[in-house]
Each structure stands twice: as structure tokens, then as C-alpha cells.
Length: 469
Image: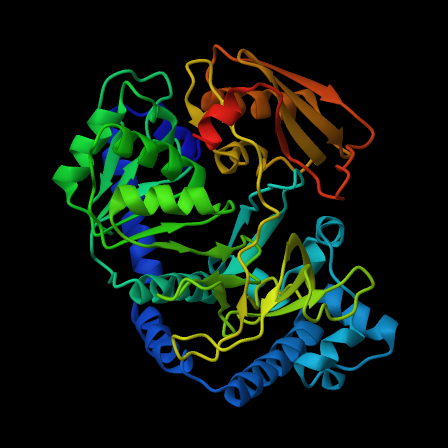
């Protein structure tokens, strides 16, 4: 039995033991000497000039490509097929000699994209699913170094907001902290190792919100982190009831932070929102400084290109993100095309950092889903059931009415009834057993008139009341 399954079945007291044991293991891995060394380095490199940034990325790219050609079968074969040598990629501009890597390429060649060196040492690699907000999740691998580096980048953005490791933080994310059918508090668990208060996002409706407020106030957090739509719902309650939770910063990601979301959240928590953007593929991490003018592309983490539909640089216009990890040598992804669109910001940031910036991604917006009792469910929470099922090429969630949801699926080879049972069980655990959930199969799922794919569609009118209150 895996840890997640054991946690879901455990009584509340044992859940606390399991969570803190897991957190202690993560802490030992992510906060040691390597973390301190990387963090010290990042405090220096954030002030690099544009020329220093270019030299840094060119040097790291050469190192990555040499490793990929020597140790990653997919790239060894690709370079040979193209008649290229690793030495032909010397600068970021040379990346255009290589084709774009798509999700389909990764799905087809996942084992060939693993480094022989890292994969031989299974302790060094960990695997997980992408968020799947486009309806087509991936299974990706991260080296131990990548996991530490990712943590260090995350804490650098928290330092930009004035938050240091060890300060108390409330987490309102997509993990099922307590059973969904639980009707009495606590709806949370405390991580004593990292000083996090993990709170269930599935119980955030009017009956229970006063209990959340009471618990958060007694916890006295320095910051709150969560999905924008979840924080927006909670912030509206705080304002409506005249309550305020004062913190130093709010962090959010995984969904677009709409203007009215930001204004409402900042009013309720008495501080600025730091909106960040990252991928499970670990190719890009973009964070906000105190200027809140777009998002800084952490150049040490990866290389980001912005291309138009013809594959040329999208200069001064919106384009598709194409990204290259500079740190994940365990499963290097070079020129990986992200489904999101954005624009680069040419002007220097008033914070003094020469790190490039992009506008906040707006193409991740999905409709909200509502449980039968009216509780809003973030689309990011709904991605979890799909993460580890690799036999789905594409999916789409349609809320037909207050009591029924249709999951549309384009099957891949190997899809079976067990996959379906697993998907439905995990899905109902998030939307409630009183929601009718059905599955229907399609050969393909269409995009809308703008060319965007809507992963979640809510056909009820409830979303208008909640999103534009």
C-alpha cells in the first residue's frame, strides 16, 4: 500500500504522524548543505547584468547538451539523425538548430529521455505527474539536484516577499488533507517540521469558513499560499463578514490571477500577492518581485523562448513558450513546448534585476466546478485524479448541471476498466459522492474559436455569481 493510500485511510491522529514523517524525509533531502550552497549562489546571480546572464546560460547549456548527447538515448539519436554534434550547440541562439519537443514526443519516448547515469541510480530519481490542465498529463522524472534547486528557487521568491524558511505558512492547495465527507473540524493538519498549516480546500464553504478563520488566526502565519480561485473564494468570505487575516505575503500559482482576484485577495489579507508560474516538467520557473510588474524568468533554472505560429521569435507580440531546463540532468527536456501563451517585457524592471520578464500567463483560465453543496472546486485540484493514468491521450470535464459532471476522454493504448475505476474514485473523492459523474469516449476533443482548449467547461450559471461577485 502506497503512502497516499495509507494516509487517506488513516484516522486523523495517525494522519498527523504520517504527514510529519513524510515532511521530515523531504526536509532531509531538500534543506541540507546543497540547498544552502545553491541559495547562496542564487542570492548573487539574481543581480547579474544582461551580459553575465547570457554567458551563464550559454555555459550551462553547453554542459547540458554534452550530457544529453552522451547519456540520454533520445538526444543521442536525434543529434545523429540531424547530422549534429553536441559541440554545434554553443549558445542559446543555437537551440534553433533543434526541433521543438512536444508532449506527444515525451509520452512516446519517456524512457529514452532518461539519463542512463541518473536512471542507474534509482535513489537519485523521483517521478510524478504533470498538472494536466490541458487534459493530457505527463509522467516526468526529476534528479535529486533538480528537486533541491527547485526548492531553492521557490525560497528565493519567498525571500523577495520577506519570508524566510521556518516562518509559519498556511497552505490551501489541492491535497486531500482530511476525508471529503468530514463534517466537523479539524479540516487541517500541521506540519511541525516545515511550520506549514495544511488546510483542506475541499471544505471551504460558508458553514466551515469561520472555523478556518479561527484556526488561521491562532496559527499566526507570516504568509498564505494557494490556488487563486480558492483564495478568491475565501477572501470574499473574509470581506463579507468583516474579518481580516493580516499576513506579510500571499503566494499563488497554477491558475491565472485575474485583476479582481488580486484586488480582493490583497484587501482580505492586507498585503500584496506574489503570483508565480512553474511546471512539473521543471523547465521554467517565473516569479514576482516587489514591483509586481510581470514575472521574472529565473534564468538559472531554464531558458525560455517565445515563438510565433511559424516557429520564429515572437518579438513584441504574444507567443508560445518553448522552454529548456538547465538543471534537470536526470530527464533533460530541451526546447519543450508549453501550451501556455504570454509576452516578454522589454523594459528593465524597477527592482534593479536584469532578469528577463514575461507577462502573467492568461491562457490557463478554466471554469470553476461546483459541488452539490455549492463549494467551488479549483480546476487545479481536479487535475490530480488524471496525473498517474497514462492511458488517456486527452480529457475534458463538463459540468452539465448542479448534480452531474461528464468526463470526456480520448483513450490511449492500454486504457482499461481499472483505469476508469481509479479515475472515477479519485474524482468523486474531490467533487463528492453525491455528484453524478459519467465518462464518455471521443476520437478527438475540439478547441474553441480562438484555438484554445478549455479543459473545464461549466454549463451552469453558478460560475457567474462566484467569479464576478
